[in-house]
Each structure stands twice: as C-alpha cells, then as structure tokens.
Amino acid sequence: MCRHVAYLGPEVQLRTLLRDPPHALHRQSWAPRRQKHGTVNADGFGVGWYAPGDPVPARYRRPGPIWADLGFTDLSRVVRTSALLAAVRDATAPGPDQEAAAAPFASERWLFSHNGAVRGWPGSLSALVDSLPPAELLTLEARNDSALVWALVRHRLADGDDGPTALADTVLEVAEAAPTSRLNLLLTDGETITATAWGDTLWYRSEPGRSTVVASEPYDDDPYWCEVPDRTLLAASRTDVLLTPLKEPTA
Image 1 (tube, rainbow, N blue to C red):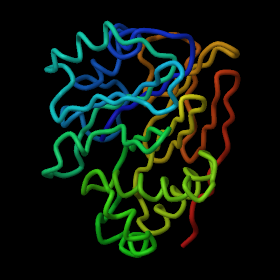
Image 2: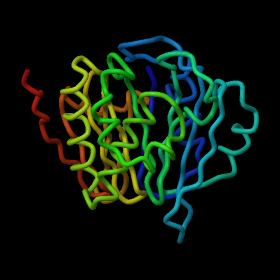
Image 3: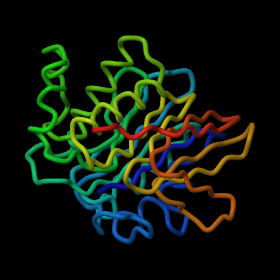
C-alpha cells in the first residue's frame, strides 16, 4: 500500500537516499520490487528532515506522484540532512484530503508513516476512536486509517511512552480490534528509528557508529541489507539495531 524509508547518519543530500540509488523510493513509486499489496504508489508522497540545531523537522508533501514533481527534484539536490523519513503512497481508498493524507505525519519532534491498511476501517476502530480525547480527533491531519493510527501513537507519546512502547502497544491494540490489518509503522525523532513489520516487508542496513537505514525494501543490492521478520518491532539508533518479536493478539 505504500513504501517508506528512514535514515540516521552523516549529513547527505536528500537525493542520495531518495533518488540516486537504483531502486530508491523514487523508483519504488512505480516499480517496487517487494511490495506485497498494490503495485503503484502514486497517490502522494512526502519527506520530513531535520536541520542542525533544530529538533522540529521540516516537511515537503504533495498529493501526486513523486516522479511528476519537478520542485522535489531541485529540493532533493540542495537540501542536506543527517536524519529523514520519507514515503510514497498508494491510497487504501479515494478521499478528499490531498497532501494532508500523505506521510510523514508530524507532531513536535516526531515524524510518522504507516505502510498498510486497517481492515474494516472506520467501523473496526470505533472503540479506539472513542478512547481518544476530542482534541486528538479534532487535530487529525486527514480522514484516513493512517491518520487515526498516528493519533493513537501520538497520544501514547504525549503520555510519556517512548517510541518502541508507543508503536508496539498501538499495533497490538489495532490488530486486536481489526484482525488481518497490515501495520508496518515507522517513527523517528531524528535520533532514533522505531518500526514494526506487520503484514508487509521491512528491511534495515546498519553501519554501527555511522548510519542506520530502515526501509520497506532495499534501495540497492548491497548484501548487508537484513530483512526483518514479520510480527517484529525494530528499535534503532546510529549505533545499533534491536529486534523484538511482537505477540499476535489472541481471539
């Protein structure tokens, strides 16, 4: 349903990660190699990145395909960053939200993306919607399943959970309410990356002490890419990557 990627490491141009590699996110928008659901990711895209000395990321999002945006071609050439999260979107269902529905979603220092779909949306999550404060619902960026999942994660972060706890608990809660949902989530604060593999592909490549990349699929054929098993939580920094199994909710 989408492809996404997050990076921590030495400062690079956006294009070094998103356009230049032979199977970069730019190419994955029309020719993903490992996507299990959907074939073309042309319903919007976005990138969020961190500038030195500023913990709040900038974002660039558009409602159309990444390959048709000439402004992003220039942007990716001149902007440099040491941390980013980017995504290309294949919409679960048509909607009026335009670029507001494109990841990354953001709140304070956090960037978030959802690759997947919530089964039975919106009715399947009615109880979870009711559990959120009205202010959380009023500040939804879009009226889709990904924005609601982000609201659930964001609420936990605001209550003091760290990234791994917020993502793991949200995935298990949504999976219990809507079985067979696909919930590959990606979260960064510019210093850490947290992700879940739940129903679609997830990979990472780490050079300890230097850089970490987490992505829906490898953007090149480097043999050091490692696949994350399904039903797994990934927690990473620039120095290490930790994988933890996620327990399937019981009926």
